[in-house]
Image (cartoon, rainbow, N blue to C red; front, side, top):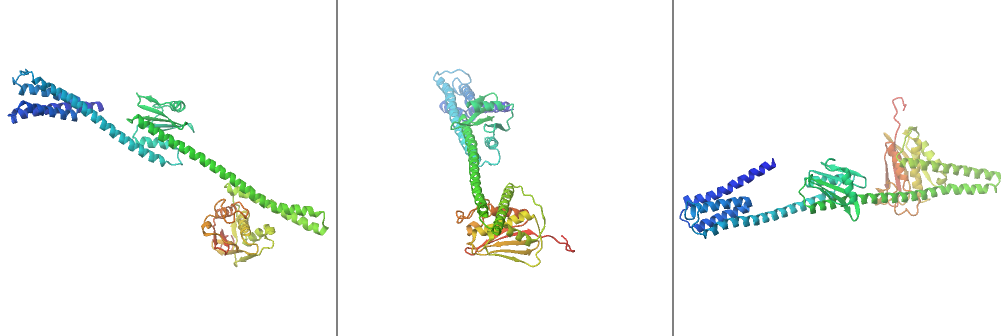
Length: 487
């Protein structure tokens, strides 16, 4: 179909060339008759020059021959014959032909240069568009697949395939394995040599940058220059290697943070375990030196501290499971007063010589919770208040009904939390900068407490003012009672 249309176009242009020559002949034989042969010759020359410039060499030669024959037959003596009486008129006829050839060659050269300049400009514009598109690739999707799709889209290609050597996978856009095999793509990436199949109109380029091989790129069905092809290959290589470098950097940063968190957690656990172990060792060392009544008291201390150490280990395991997302609730109706009392008992050693105030609203309903986890959340808030408040300042625990929840709060009289840090204190591993160096901890306590509360369908928040202390609030679902008072 394309060849047929091209032939029709050439035939039409040839007929147009002869029509122009015929029109000039008709004008000078029928309309403007009082004109010398030189003027007529110049008119034919200008017409041939125009045809050569507009259409090309073949049309100009046909017009030149036609013009020479018409000029000879109608305007050179003897008129009406193809003989030439004056040999000098051969110069005019030769001039027609030379003009046609020279003008056509010059015109073709100019047109080719103009077309080449236009094509290079279009390639530069498309390369710029491609580079912008590759800068905005989605990190969540395969990079090589996006490069393949965007390259085919921007350059309007019949097909593109990219072999990502790092994951040993080929991404294709409109290009089947029959046109370009996976094996050929791998061979080009390994050998790092450009391959061209002229019959299939396929280019395969190695994607190399700085000696590092990213894979290979296949392009099918394109009139792109070889320079532009290599530019596309460089852009693809830069994009893929940059993505690989970012992934490696992210993995290294995650590993570094993981190691830092492990170190911090071990340091905090060591500090938490050290207190009961010290008490146990001191009590055990003193048993043999004391009378039976004192021995009984020391054994009690050992028993309590052992229980506390066992509780710390249990809570550490539970916190690790919560951190891993393995949170399973076993809910039942629980008394708020018993939850608070149980938390205070487990922290009895830490709460010695501290002023603890408890305030309850009358007719406080039960809460429907996992008692162990709800108690752990409350203990985290109490421990946080003990760490960050002055030993002489009181700690107040309040509980009130706010249907369909029960609201519980822990208030201290410490220095408070700066406004700029208040929004971050529930984030994992986050610690207030002003006290991070002097107060032990992992930065996990508040995060775990909040996760427990959220898993029960409640909320947790904080209210704080500089030098006026902080109050942490959380809500737990109240037990629903029917008309007979049953849950």
